[in-house]
Image 1 (tube, rainbow, N blue to C red):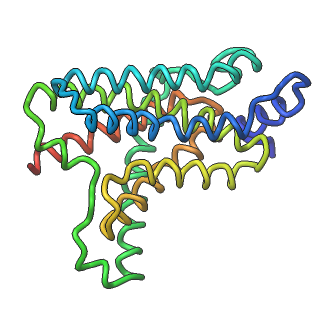
Image 2 (cartoon, rainbow, N blue to C red):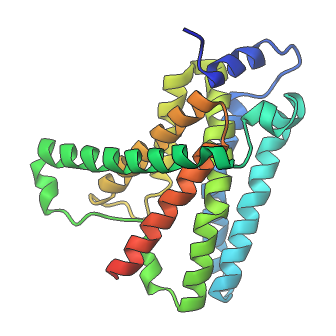
Length: 245
């Protein structure tokens, strides 16, 4: 049986005599998001009051800039964005794959949360934490802008960072499953907003999503399908949140 496309590509990258990127770049990728969040906290702590849409645009621009910076060395050393990271956009031929994987991952999340409640009954009395209910407190202009950014910029940046640089950088040293688990745990924890018991629901559901996206990247060797799944998933969660609210 032939190796999955991503495994085959990693084997090629390992043999590159001039390659120096790897685990260090993976670490930079996973700290990029909290770095932007920390910078935002400093700005707020300094008393600088900016309109919400301005804050969202600045934060998004900072994330894009950090993603480009973190990706620079792998891209330069390994033959461009697609050759190094599998970075591309979804194609029309990916449509059914994107829909199918999105539905499958939502069902997997539901199964994982159901199993969690069965194994840990006290959690049935805990209010589940989500990372989207904060949207309901936003004024309409900020809500619309945040929705657009969540469906467009966030999937692109997060797939490049986590399933691009982080997954591949760790695979160069650890192999697929250890790299997938480590990058996914960071991906899940970074979606937690408040450290409380209810955050376990966020960690479990986002871990299922992240691990599924790692497997998709492995099977296709590309980020495009994962970007599509991530965007569709975010759009569905946003829609359900607004409808429920």
